[in-house]
Image 1 (cartoon, rainbow, N blue to C red):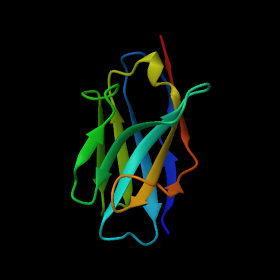
Image 2 (image 1 turned 180 degrees about the vertical axis):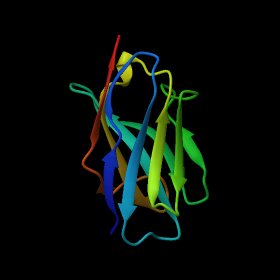
Image 3 (image 1 turned 90 degrees about the horizontal axis):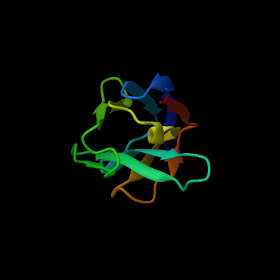
Image 4 (image 1 turned 30 degrees about the vertical axis):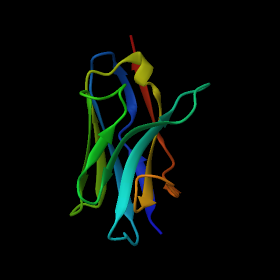
Length: 118
């Protein structure tokens, strides 16, 4: 299975930017989906963005136009570029892997904290 390790989180001022990274290793199926999720205290886990093996992306309405998900297979790394950050973006961010469709994510990283101050 795929192992995932997130990094790049931190504290930024509202309007700032952060770039999260997710290093992955292990066997990758021909058809797969990778995604970024986030969870703030008291809130349910939210799917932020996904990208499949064809490069097709999908974003939550709350981040559309501000966040960009991308993948560099040569570096075995998934990225989440976050611009125009808002305090509501503060959460623990996780990357995850699913075989086939972007559902049933079975492999998760340990998470990286993002804090946006006003």
